[in-house]
Length: 340
Image 1: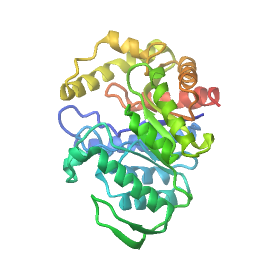
Image 2: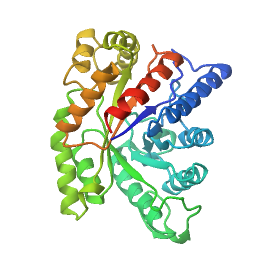
Image 3: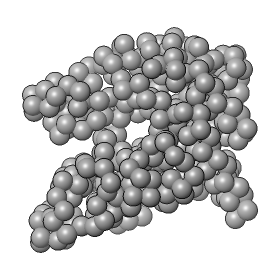
Image 4: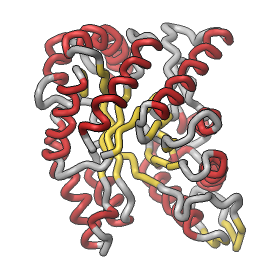
């Protein structure tokens, strides 16, 4: 099983963005953590895409390219690329360039994102939420598979036998489908034979098994080999020397972040009881000592019928750069070998 980290390049800013010096420091720390993950033997590092004051990841391929120059082995991916609000030609060109810089370590996780700021920012209508993604995914995969492209759709000008360059080192460039809880998305990934990255940030992980079964059934029906239908798990998580330490260090920032998001989305404030349930035996949060987290990941994998990749989303307003570095070291030293 591959083990990695996902980051949204959080600034830890409260009501305003950091100043230039603060942003530079946060970005330097993020790149240092990617380098540390590479040295610790982790398999993948992903950068999200958001267009909000509390994140610095609005141009994720720029961050990944900077990381590519400082790393040797770790795979570099989006987490996720908001494909619905992007031009698939530029997405492909950006990641093909990243693949060249990294000598064949780039991946795309294409999705629609859990925030919607990108849609009005780039001139798209949220009423076209699903149609935009379906069409743009089709174009991205067509570009991936054909150097010269003939294509026509609704939301973009047609392409009449246009060559798309550069071409990536990997052939084909890996494209995962990032999904939440929509059954149609799982079926779509299976039908297309794309590896699946499932974001499970709450609830009980085993409840996603019927959706993953839908994915595998759709893939088999479309004639894709079982080994092609890989499942990855993206979860909120944090590792410390002891479970009590991990919980106490993680909870304050978790509560702050999700209470803030809850005000935007109509959720009630986070309580400690809710958090403890999520961090418990069957909950989605991967928080604890290395031994306990490794065992929980194994339980999740068994419950979901086997997973190929797990990534920790550790951005948290209450966690210092030094604590995140220590968590990465623990994951590399204990969790990676435990899951091999």
